[in-house]
Length: 192
Length: 215
Image (cartoon, rainbow over all chains, first blue to last red; front, side, top):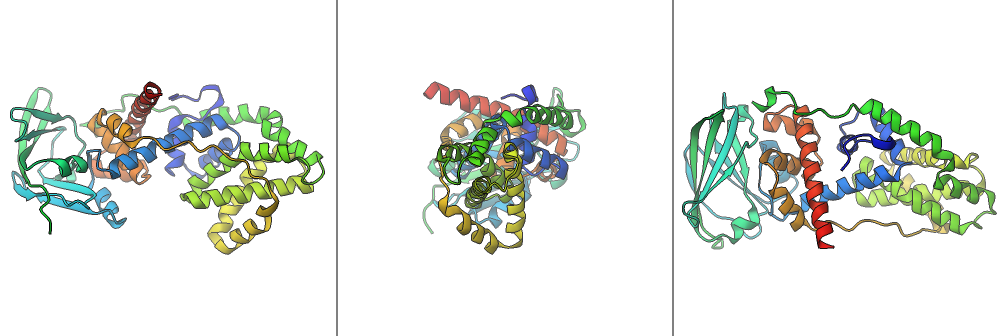
């Protein structure tokens, strides 16, 4: 994907900014006008929008895990997305499951983040003894005092009963410091 | 900390790039395929240049639809806008009311803007216009690309660093601008745009690569 205004075309990031309503009025008018004349840029925009549709569909299907923000979860719930949420205190644990019609699983891990520069999350599952999955440099809002972790819902729905842990590790250069460990005792859905 | 560091690279300046893009297009507008088709419609007896009308529709309808998608955020409303604007444009060319046919793209843009403004004032007027003009105008099929395989997209997302994946999900799930995401992840809006740009580039290359390998 081109990232420059080569051959009189609008840069990709400008097209995306226009699509997301980040452009000011004058810039919006300019892009509007350009797109009414340029099929190359229109095609690029179509590809971006199509990719966005694919991201949305993949996420809605529970195929994508992510770290998100609390407002994002609230917006999804307000839109009617069926959210199952677990809030864990520092070093806490929870008995958890997921219902067939749940669309999104949310784990809110309470953790003091003041002064943390970089955060990694280490996942361990009882059905994979000795295997550690490390999520590096996860985004977080220190002021929120929590990490909002969204596992792949489809994967959790298919998982057998297991216990898994998430350990949050603050790193600074070569120094790593464990902030907290959270335990999920998962059982497949057994009905209401 | 990420938000305290400078972006690893900066995005190109928008204004200069846009100006350059517009100048290049203005110079060639009169000879653009849509201008040629518009001239043929205007020069013919009303309704006699059906091929040119279909050609004009094929060229300009997708562009009007993109405008509608951006400004109305609704597929059906965008399709209605496209239909209405194209019907109005061809009607104006047939009747000779559009005195500079080579400026047909500008006319379409103006019609899009007015229709969206009208639509925001009154839904009823838009439907009336559609019913009034749409009946006697040829409509060519326009190509709409099929949806991507979301399993493929999920696989490509999975290969991205956490920050890029999270920001792309939060961006596209809800068409969220950078400033709405920034505060939730402890980043500046500028950082979000840089990470988003980098992630989008990788994602597109991965998905495109998979599509080519699978074809």
